[in-house]
Length: 410
View 1 (cartoon, rainbow, N blue to C red):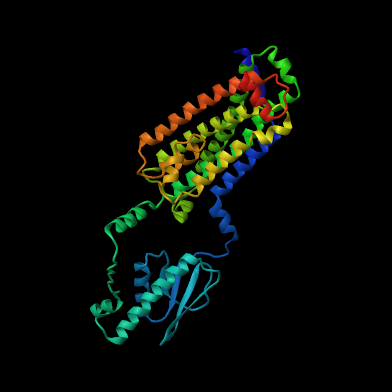
View 2: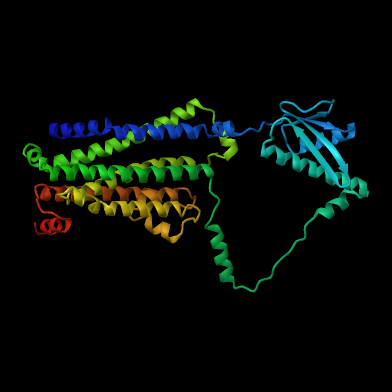
């Protein structure tokens, strides 16, 4: 146990103190705080200023009518009569230039936000419509009839089966919650980049020891399996440490900054699936890291030269890349056959199961089955890696295929 602890601490501390670890962690933390202030950053480059008051240059009837329409449009702008002078600050002046055709002019000191311009256009469009109704001397019922759209039904010669397939196709693409989509994307992207980073590191650790023959001195005092398990555990702990730093940064950002404007602007509101998705995303993220690091240690055990390392780790790169693309490009496709099948294939499970957790049709049993598959696979991979490492630790054979043939004979 003491030998395991010594190897574990030596590997863990050296990796945590590495400049690459510190710099990469600080960059991601900085990006988290920048994302938390994206609305403020946008406002720095946005010269527009929200209008608080609209001064109507017209008679009392025009002021009353415009005020009524702006209230109906649920705007935050106050409507008051224009008392002369030019618009200044958060005030805009509305002038009616022509009545046939009706044209308006709005003067303001600063650029008006696009959202407020849309509200103003909608209210003034309704103002024009009401004015036209009064000039044409038609009743409200007749005006409503003029604005009605016809009901059109299509009688298409299609079989009931085809219609059923169309209905099923529509149900397979449900509307996704924006916040849930962000949680899923962040989980998959972080998982992919951490896997690519630490898979290479643990493979390099094992291959470097074997290529430099340092392993001969190590195994004279430490059992090969104990040494390998300490290395794997240390790399897993380093990756989880970095992940915890990211989570703490997110929590601090939530406590420090007001997200009300950001939530209202982007519609980031939680629903009944948000908590479940967050829990399973974190769980599959950790299990995915453990699985891929164990696979990397297994593949690194075949290597006796650093030149062969990239070739040996190619399966890790390809599997993680396939899983990443399956998850990212099927977000809005629902639970299609590709998603369902790959969610039960261990290398793809951590990327695809969080996607299925976004949909109400996925039950708890399916998600727990994925967790069980990951745990069993991790145990099998670790056992296989231990066996291969024990048999190849002192091998001087060059080339992966030679090591494979030799291990198979043993």
